[in-house]
Image (cartoon, rainbow, N blue to C red):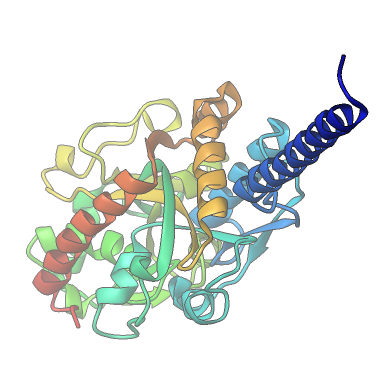
Length: 342
């Protein structure tokens, strides 16, 4: 038989074991909770289109937030903010200095994030290296566009006019001189042997404003992204003279020849992607990369991309960052050829 003293010792040992076990469980739970992080996101998410309404950035931001909400991949409210100015440079300066740790503000962009950082006039000291690249979502192409009642029926007729007098026609686009729409506008002329620095180019804050200028008679030709003019083409308000793709597009653009088809070797791909702040937390970065990976595989997103006339081309954060470094080299070479580099 156990003595009372021994029973007491056993009971004390058991109590101690239970106590230690409870402490261990609490520590494990606490450790697990710490590993899980803060449960990001806990607030509404803002996705910025650094342009006015109606352009490619605006459409991308709205499609991105709409499908994320529809698929319930993000349960927090998602809003789109338009912050135009300087072809994206004004917002980029604010984002890189004032929102550097704001995990709840993302933005969409395209080649201008590289171009604005490299070009000579009106350049931005900030570029993609001042962000956290999260993913490339789509690709689009440049379009050379006139009004439906324009005398110009094809790309060559515009280029011949410009070759005679580079200042006669007013070209316009939704970005600053030396930026993407400007490059799209003048690239065919440059390839056709025209001095691009002599071409008259007027910039607007976003593709939507550039189209308004064209329809209002304030511009003769605009260079923009094909997806931005899709609805105007369908409504019969514009004529697309050329697309800067390597092959003719399908759907609404199936009857539009490429610049290459018309003897002008002017190709320009417009990617669009999503970025976070430079000092984005590891938790937020992992959350968005996972959410976007699921988004691009969803049938809802694939349908949206088709509806908008884009092409799905997804790159995850790591691949996107590498791609941006490669394109930075390409853009630098193009700007040097045009005499527009820093």
